[in-house]
Image (cartoon, rainbow, N blue to C red; front, side, top):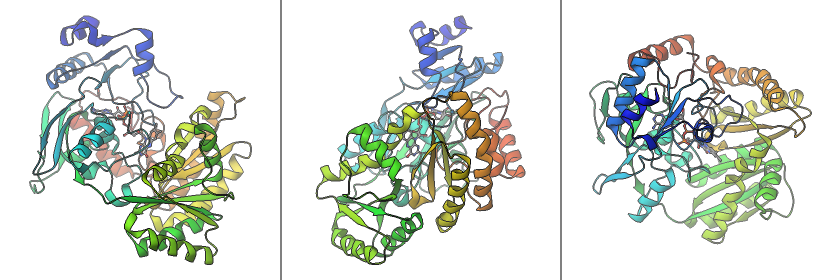
Length: 456
Ligand SMILES: Cc1cc2nc3c(=O)[nH]c(=O)nc-3n(C[C@H](O)[C@H](O)[C@H](O)COP(=O)(O)OP(=O)(O)OC[C@H]3O[C@@H](n4cnc5c(N)ncnc54)[C@H](O)[C@@H]3O)c2cc1C
């Protein structure tokens, strides 16, 4: 096998040492077995094609690997697969100054594209805490969301074209940056969010947006969770908002301790809302805040007075994932329609309190999109496997509530290995059958990220 791989890639681009297998064989998760047989680093689309054809002949599974910041085990290789890292295909190949489209190799880091756009007085609006490591190929394959979805939508909205290598080794050039293209099935969108199960994204034409006006950030203390939604409603009545996030007091304690940050408000509240909006609306936001205090929804707030202060306030939300990582949290990333959020939260909270009386439960998320991150933190003394099994066992009770509210068991992190057993809470049998049929078309040998999304 190594000989065959060395024929496709020069030898320094095939790694089999234990450290490399452990490093590239997994994503941000820590609960899954990691056991790839090799890691390869293609430089060209032709090499990816040759690899796929070889894998089809030999029936060896391929695991696409981006920045490995995924939170669902999508890029974990646990069964002797070959990991295909896009770390070397990391160039922005072209820029179209009329259509404002950047043609990126799959391994371009998200932040690299953000900076590239900024240097041209443009804006790449998909943003989240792992943007400094995650790659465009990974973002497309998970349809990444993040903190600006409320205004700009998900990664899908910014994919103007895709070049993919399917599981048969076919190269497809999908949509080619067209705004209008009414010629049947838009296969581009099948590959967005496919988690590498249909083929490799090798290039993506990413649409850039105009630069936004200067932004302000306000953090508000909110004693009751349903009132966070009431505050969101008031903001939306008055002004366009770019972000609306929430986090609990426990999340604030973790992030302030981890990053040595100052607490935003003099008094603690059970929950906090972080709102971002055009600076031109700062006065209106202050009036709105007073109104919310009068209604009893909000106790206190802080409004950024500079870009630096806005950045500091954002750290309170953006640093949470990193601050709880040492507790190897069991992550739930669920969504419901915004109108259903208050009732949904109440029901989930009751289950969680009853099921985990001895665990710390950390709530935060993109509540303005109906997307909540529920993190159960592992007590230091508890064995990791026991903890994982216990949480996994309780998950169906949460997913039953998700199902009843017509929600999704994975809002933006993807299904991967973590949610694979629970797909049926969100997708009907007919939908799953259609997905399997599509997989058969693009990956008839079953070599593309086997065992992810649904059991192989
Ligand atoms: C601190 C932190 C904060 C985060 N916040 C958010 C957030 O707010 N919103 C959000 O959506 N996500 C968030 N994430 C999750 C993660 O960053 C995203 O899912 C991101 O899109 C993953 O990109 P990646 O390059 O790291 O992909 P990886 O983890 O490497 O892979 C993700 C999936 O894509 C597949 N894949 C990777 N590259 C390719 C390719 N070229 N072709 C085909 N398939 C491919 C992999 O096989 C895997 O299934 C966060 C993660 C961390 C660690």
